[in-house]
Structure formats: structure tokens, C-alpha cells
Length: 620
Image (cartoon, rainbow, N blue to C red; front, side, top):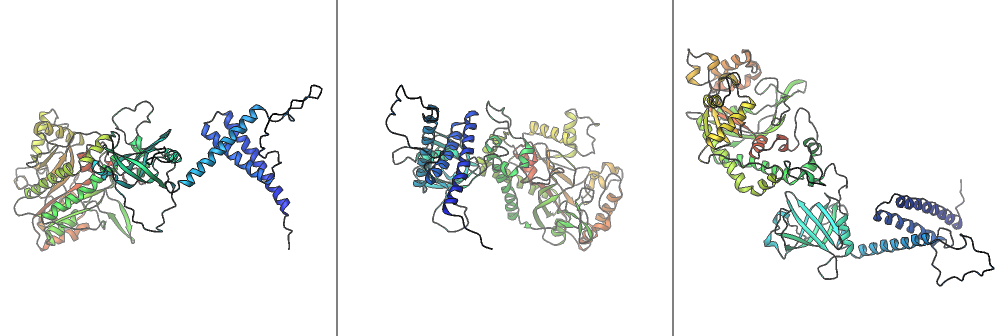
């Protein structure tokens, strides 16, 4: 079937009708904006669009009622007295309409001028195409943290986020943020060789916060108290948007970076709540404080591994999918493993013992995930965290383990102090804290009984803390404060815990366990905990290496009311490993997130977890 093509005249008429309808609609938009007293830039943009439509109509039909009419030169002669007065329509547009036309014309001219300036300066500013690995150049980028007084006079390229932007008159200010570090960028419009086009100043002022930009600039000396790079600023030569952010963010990084203990100033948004931060964690992690926290956290496992490597330890990786619970109890995540019941590892405990004591590695450490199905919605508990575990053969006494741990933590604390001064200062700006104190000569050691005695002296009764009961969270904090006041340290070790509150693999204390006159409830153990700011960070002990004693303790704990432990059959592969001779050994496990939280004295462990997992949070 054939169809007749439209004639050019018919086509043109259709185009004019469509444009006329668009012009009418846009005219209503302009009227509405004016009636609402909208901002001048918004009105100007709408007027410019109306002019653009009318220009198209004029090009097709200059006589059309909505075409732009040229002004008539010269004054019109007044009609003779005897002639009839012309009607309003015949007398031409009113003064109001003339003013509107003049305004429309100026807006159109300004728009065209801005477009022309942008086109002429396309090599100096603007939005770049999506980077799709089309080419590689010799361009070298400098990290913001490297911009110091020694850089003054150099021309550099940086890639960073727009932390804040503002433009006023011929000046534009942009704070660029890369990781923990910020630097002020300044652009000035003018006629000298160091100036930039006025359109570039306008472009910088309109960039949305969190947009990623490439900036070419000259480093200049300056005093900028509000940025991390306080003695320099960047005189901008070129700026390009690499990836633009939406203007409406769930919260502003600036607001999330303020001191959480300081009241909001007039005009400031309130500080951002923890739930909001965690719901939009990718934005919260952009704050300088979060960047600094996670950079410190990332270094601690390296310090842990480097120190133990030098002590002759071997890094190992144990399985996280188990056929039974690591240490017994109900706090395991259960799952189906090819039709068989399984669970996620609560710790690498049994495997690191088998590797150190039974497989002749003697000294091992592991850095890996730990899973605890504990319904604890506290500020210091997570369902998934990073464990730093070590196990070592001993010769005579489990204090050999304490000696290694004491030197290990002194190394970690000292390295954070010396290598992360900038990060500590950045964290303190948002989360103020007192510097961590520890004894350089070696960790303070107290017995469990001595700890209970300190609590008694402070007025904690036996009803509030039994002599053979595990310490409550509240009493741990009280003890931490007492130790700090008496010994001047935030870090200490407490050992000889009651056997009844320790796992089945813990070696009993020979002085009480072998004494027939000592009741089982008062048996002690060769075990220890370590504390930072009054909270436990390490649990450890000498382990049982004798097969018979180990099986006896497994059976006793499993059948003992209130103690608990795995069924002997469920861990037979573990207990069987000790039939063939095993080294005396001991060790402990450290919670990475808790160590960093307490060193920085943060109020919640979730601030240290990258994407925290607790009983109520499985995303993002």
C-alpha cells in the first residue's frame, strides 16, 4: 500500500503549529514563575527557552503572530485630531510588554554569550565524556595529601571530590577532598594571564557537592585553617567534571564531619545519626573521620602479622565451614552443606591448636572472619568481625604467651602513635578522645582475685560481683577506671580466671585443680583476658595438650549444668589429633574492630566495621 508524502508547505505548517503551541505553553511557565516570584536565574532560563522557540518560529514564518518582530526605528506620527483613536491592538505593544521583550532579548543574548564562552573555553572547563579506557596519556596526578609548602610554584593535576563549592562575583572557591585530606581551590575571573573566564567561575559555583573533578592548578602559599592542607591553596587553571553527583544527597558529608559533641551552630544542619550513616554507608565512609578510622584499622592486621613473622610465627588459614560448632553453644550460624548440617566458624580455635601443637608448626597466627550468632544489640558486639588469632608452643609456662602478647600490643600502640598522627588528629576533629595510655615497659598484670579485690575496695559488693563469677560489662568498666587511676594505664592483663567460666580446652590451674580440699566451683585456670579502657579485647589461655585430660574436660563440660560445651562425638577429629603427641601450647584471640574502637575511644563498634553486621542489619 502506498502513502502520499506530505508536501513541504504542509510539513512547515505542522512545524509552526507545534512550535506555536510550545511557545504558548512556555509563556505560561514564564508567567507562573513571575507570579510566584521565583529566583531570577530560574526566570531568565525560562525566558531564554521561550525566546529560543520564538526564534525557530521567526525563521519559518517572520509574519507569524508569535514571531519576534523587529523594533521600528523612529517615532510614529500622532494621529490627527479628527482621526479616530487607534484601538489598543492597533496601537502596538504596551510598555509592560516592551519591557518583557527587552528582558527576553537580554536573556537570550546572555545565554548565547555564555554558550559561546563555554565553547571557546572547552579546553579549560566542562564535563568530560565517560572514561571508557579509550587512551592513556602522560598526565601525572598528585595526591592531595602531598600538597605542602614544598610544592609551592608547581603546576599539578589532582582528582578529588567537591567537598564544598561557592562562587561570588568573579571568584570561585572549591574545597577538594581526597580520602582524609582537603585543599582549597580558587579561581578568579579577569583580564590578566592568571585569570580564568567568567563562565568558568560560574561553572565551578554550580558543581554539586561530591562531584568528582580533575583540576589543573598552580600550588600557592596560603593560610587555610579549614582544610587539612593548611599552608597551601590551588590557583585553578582548568577544571573538568569526571563524574557528577546528584544534588540531593541523603546527608551532606560536611554535616557528617562535624564534631559530634559540639552543638550545631545557627544555620547548620544537625549532626547525622548513626542509623542514617549506616543506611548510606558509602557516603558516610567518605567523611575524613571514617577514612582515617578505616586506614588505621587496615594497618593493625599488618602490624600484627609483621611482628609475629619476626617472632617465628607462620600465617595460616583455617576453614570457616564446619560440621560442628567451634566451641559449642547455641551462638552459631547454622546452614545446610550439600544436605548435611553445618555452621560458620565461631573462631579458628580448634584448628590453630591442631596446627601449632599437633602439626609441628609450633607458632601460628591467623587473620580472618569470625561469626557469632549472638542476639546482642550493644555498642561493642557484632555478628561478624575480624579475628586476629595466635597460638604457640610453650616450654614451661603460659606466661611465655603473655610476654609475646605484651610486646605485640606495645608494638601496635607505638606504631599507631608514630605512623598515624594525621589520622588520629582527623578522627579527633569529629570524635574527640583522650590519647590512649599504656606502660612502655610492659603490660600491667593482675590476677583475677586482685581485680575482684580492687572492686571490693571501690564498694562493689559480693552480690554485685561474685568472687568466681565472670565480670559483668559494668564491672569491667569500673575495674578499668580503677586501674587507670591507680596505675596510669588503659591496657592491662588479668589472669587466673575461674575454671568454671572458661572453655573446655583451657588448662586447669595446678594449685587448685589438684587440691582435693578445693571445691570445683573454686578451681582456677591458666587463662587470661586483656583489657583496653576497661573492656575485654583478648581472651586466651594455656590449652590442654594431654589427650586423656582433654577428653575428660570435654565430657565434664558437656554434661555440667551451666557450663556447656560440644558433644564429644562432634569434635572427635580434634581430640583424636592429641593421641599422637602434642606440644604444650597456649594462645589467644583478638577482636580487630574492638581494638580500634577502644584505642580511639569511639562510642560504637559499628563506626569501625566497614559494613557492619549485627542482629538487625544485613545490608548494605
